[in-house]
Image (cartoon, rainbow over all chains, first blue to last red; front, side, top):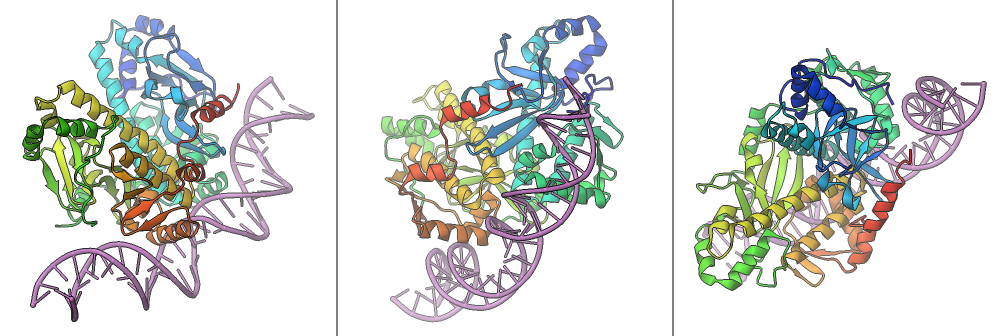
Length: 252
Length: 252
DNA sequence: CGAGACTTTGACCGTAGTCAATTTATGTGG
DNA sequence: CCACATAAATTGACTACGGTCAAAGTCTCG
């Protein structure tokens, strides 16, 4: 695992994430943060995040570290569905239980109960609820992107597309520095995310490096020309184009 | 398109679907159904289902026919995310709009507004709301299965797995006859669903036929030995096994 | 320094894609 | 009910992307 995944946001947290609530809070009132820290739950890399850790709620917010939603098949094949980054929220109620889907920490992980945040005097319940709800919605939206990735993109496109998503998400919570961000994933995790073999991920990454499209070393990635990469990877294409395409689906 | 996709359920609708509400209603009060029919919206195959068709609500229930959620990329590649079968519900509010995701009718389609059903005197609002909510939840659950399909299963497994899902869903609303059901999908739709080429889908289907695993002709499928197929296709494996597998993920 | 986890490389294989032609439905108008 | 037009399913030939296996090289951390 990488040393640590920047425990504190520090920077100006933009809205659009549950994290924004926490970021705002930190600057507003240090005392409340202290009371939060007491409720932070920690996991080590590889640990499964279960619901109902003593606390009441099943909705949690990631404070620091990376986690993923995953399923493992009988024969050992694994599919990673989504990643949870600092500021993301998830409803564990839908998770664990059966075991067909689990949240697994990919690094050391700090998590806090959404209810606890909501109960703090610094924030209205509905503010937190709204932020969490939005985070959950965004997670669902991203899963469609992910299906396109594994269903219809080539290996290169998949990798670039995923990296671009990471960039945007981390940037939204102030965890990027220019074109660069830290990424604590093994190539095997990439493979199980993108539906490829670890060997092929390795070769694809090398190719992308050789082509000068990405810089990747020591757990940090640089995307020198996101504009170009986005084009190469079918990432967040022009909305208008999409609209036009839809209109021309089949007249009838 | 196939002649028609069994417009009426007729049979004993099991719970677990928004359709159950309608099925129950039909038997209970024919007059109410009449008033429903007036509110049924129809689409032709290939049409895009938009929100706000005059009616207020954005949650709709499929009465008859098949639809799918899809995205089309700039270069024409298409990914189908999920299928909507009779009795399924969907929230169009999250959909259309941008165009990055659309609901498309795959056959002639009949749809009714969830609000209208809820407003009928025959059923309490909360009954309908609960049924719709459950349908939406199931749709989400199925998307995880789908990600596993396109991310980690082989071509044969993907096809079988999908067919098994169809069987179970259609069976739940009484649209199967023994091991057989009607399936109004072209091989191209299969391809865009499962992340394969239409040619490869064709060859895979032939192989499955030759192996006697499925019977497929004239828009209807027979799955002679679902037990066996489920095993072959990693379909709905034993819950306990999954639990065990999760426990052994990484001790730490 | 050694053990274990990751990454990298090479050789070889096989699943799935592409292109293009042909055959088979399906449907429509006459 | 037939002829034609179109959509869908098939087939063949060839390609290539990505998988598998196994070994070697690196990196980390106790």
